[in-house]
Length: 292
Ligand code: AMP
Image (cartoon, rainbow, N blue to C red; front, side, top):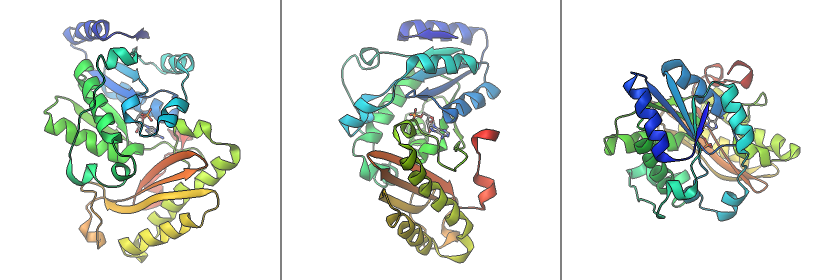
């Protein structure tokens, strides 16, 4: 695996791969890599000849500066994990390389940029979409791989690519979970053992909701989920919503939603966690790390 820090060197390597007829896959990350990230690399390797993984902790998508400061970083460990997992190129640019002048575009994708994460993290998606567009423009991959863990982000990236007419296939990959059901996240590293246990209430509630779809209306199910988490000790719920996973509007009846999904965000201690689940029978949804 080659580690590259400069855009011009990366582009020179990529154009060499491209002239050799290789299909280029791209996995953007912020590092502190876990099995969830590696599952994206694995999917990319399955359908592409060359895989580029980027590691860049993007300052403009953090709405809380202390979250940015405390975000886990361990480039050496990440580098080893990537090379052991068959990554071809690690792109690890500096802040100056990615942002020669500090800027953040402003995006309006209707409901997608208004509700849930957008409402609770002002500016987050502008920063995310700005860096994703820049990375896609620099790497120009044939396919880019994103996790459903950040479900709203994935929907925004799809809209971005469509609106900006970027020539890249966006591939969504399933959430990888720990044995406990907790969705893997770089932020889990900052949880104590007790907090980690508390955090499992998120996935447990989502899985219980998926199991009860036939018994309740979307709103009743949402209320049930909220009451579970509002009463969970050590957890501060920001939102739990049942939405149509394509429009992000709230369905009145299950038949109104082509792809019903529950999305949740909550603080455990000072760590903000998110998770989501398609509302269909549980067995269809669970991909534990052991079979990732
Ligand atoms: P991040 O480093 O948190 O920006 O995440 C980089 C990519 O990895 C994003 O597309 C995430 O959605 C994806 N990702 C993060 N955690 C998981 C997970 N547990 N399962 C699958 N994909 C994930």
